[in-house]
Length: 99
Image (cartoon, rainbow, N blue to C red; front, side, top):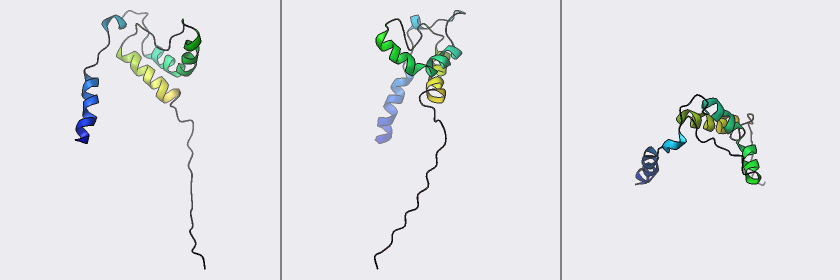
C-alpha cells in the first residue's frame, strides 16, 4: 500500500507538460546555459523579486526541458543546494560503570 501511495505523485508528474506559449525554440530563447545561470543566482533574484516587480527568477518563454535541467543543476549543484565542503565528525563515546 505504501508503494502505491508513493507511486501516485510519480504518475501524476508524468502527465505534466508545459504550456505551449511558455516554450519557444527561437535562437534568442534562454536555454541550458541561461537556466544554469538563473539557478545559480536564484537566491539573489528571489530576494530582488520581492521588492522589484520587473525581476523574475524564471525565464518565460524558455527552451523547455533543457532550460529546466540547467535551472535545476544551477540550484542543486552550483547554487543553494551545493555542499561547500566535506566535514567528517568522529565521535567516541565511552561509557564507564561507576565503581
